[in-house]
Image 1 (cartoon, rainbow, N blue to C red):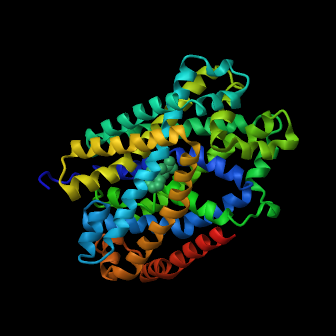
Image 2: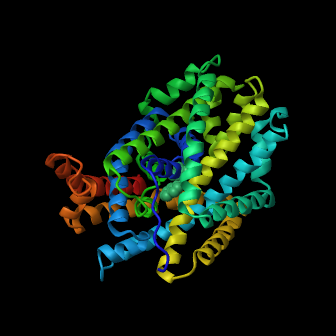
Image 3: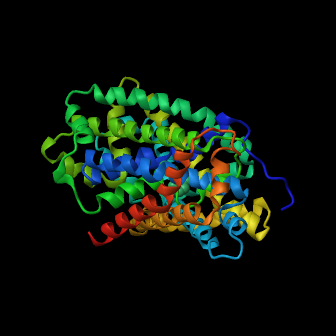
Length: 443
Ligand code: TRP
């Protein structure tokens, strides 16, 4: 490598960049549709458990690997475990990144389509919102166009450099998005008949227990926190003097808050606005990946100045998606740049081309789209997380792990904390991931 490695500038920039990666379509689009599919509150409980028991510790592990090596996700394993097969964990992550982008960029494209619909005023003249979404979904060329545009936008930010691109956009966009979500959540909860939706979200119903619920929740937790594929390794490699425990807790908290807020926006309004309350839960499941794009425009129509709310929301959603897609593309690009010595520009173009090809596939085939979503979230990310926890728990020198999370002893954490952390990574996280995985496959 000829150029000097850049780092993030400030503490707030670090949290913003990591939160910018985590908060995205996973929270606002995927979380509600997974929650609907799994019957509501029970799913959310299990989800929160997954964030606490694997999410936060694994995010810290990725930070440790990243800053401990200052390399891309595969190079990190080379450096920390030379001559071993651990590098395959990094390579698996790079592959996972490709697969995720293969369908993620298509959903990013949908957000752009809706930005246009909202800005041109088309969105608030619609009466049948699910037909409107299905029109888009059954038009591969329209989806391909938007997907390519979004991929190129992402590539542009990757090329304009880490600091400027990622840090700035996250810092500005996140607080505005957050405020808007709170306004929308309030509006949704204040609709007549919203309470059934709140009960669906917060009152667990044991009859909703299904065998795949645990795997669904775990996959969603990995996906939403951007862990299990080296994304936080890559971002960690740009970190300076930051407190890993604090950062991981802050990012996970923000991320979960945004997911739950999205739930509070979608479900109360879906229950309040449905024309046939008896079949609402089936309706929600049938909404599938379209849920957000069907229910939200309906909510905007209940608000004064619906066109403005719609435009603002979909613009911010596209930006939240952009800071996530940047983090995904950065993993793969940095890998090619550092491991194959391609220039940043060539690496980016190569990755963008590959992503566009996959994206065309998932624009034309919803089976491929669903397959990539399923395999990445429920197989590849948990597998990656499993190995990452073993790597930090068992392989890395515990002194190095301690030095990383205490910043060479400058942060006081107590010996018990470190012990508990290592114990979690050695036994609890890998065994639980394995158990959930096996139960989800046979169940
Ligand atoms: N977490 C992002 C979201 O919720 C998506 C994402 C970005 C991601 N980077 C990732 C998912 C790495 C898994 C791994 O939208």
